[in-house]
Image (tube, rainbow, N blue to C red; front, side):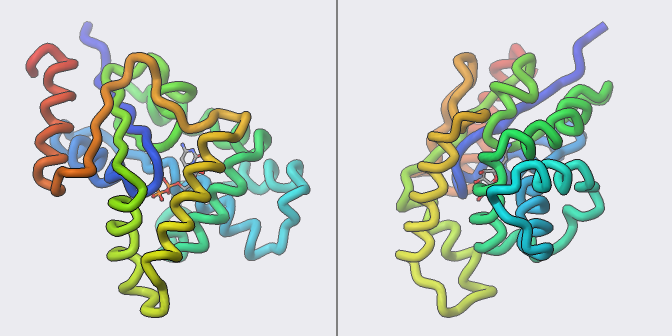
Length: 213
Ligand code: CDP
């Protein structure tokens, strides 16, 4: 029996991994989970309930009640939600509470595509294909700025670049499941690629890892 196809996309903020992951999921008819939304949802709940970021037990408990239906909320896609997500994502109790759901999603019999920071390293070290998608910080900030400016016309490029640098540093330096490339991942640098070229590059990597199919 052939193994289910399990594809892991990791990388820093606004590298393009989410877009690429959703296209590849559609190509192969696989269920897709944007795991950043789980952390964004926990951050959102923490903010709404006024939870203290030092109260790691309360945050871990809040994370246990995150349900897939909560992930539809548009409020999760904003700038503040990203900042809160990265703060709560550094808390081991939060990561522990979200872990099994992601492992189960990854290992369903249909196969799956997930994107995040620790998919290839922690959630699915056994993934069939692992991509680590990156781009230089200025390029990522430009992309993110163009997304966010639609909802917040007061935002500047410098604000977004600063957010990206702070998040890169926090995500890479935390002790619990930091952002890092799995040893067997393929690096895809999208700095000089437009979206079509990045999609073609991702498709080629997946195809090559699957032996040309
Ligand atoms: O879309 P963007 O790359 O800006 O962020 P995201 O993927 O929605 O993730 C938001 C934050 O959640 C990240 O900055 C990480 O701190 C955290 N995260 C994580 O720690 N582990 C994951 N598997 C996914 C996200």
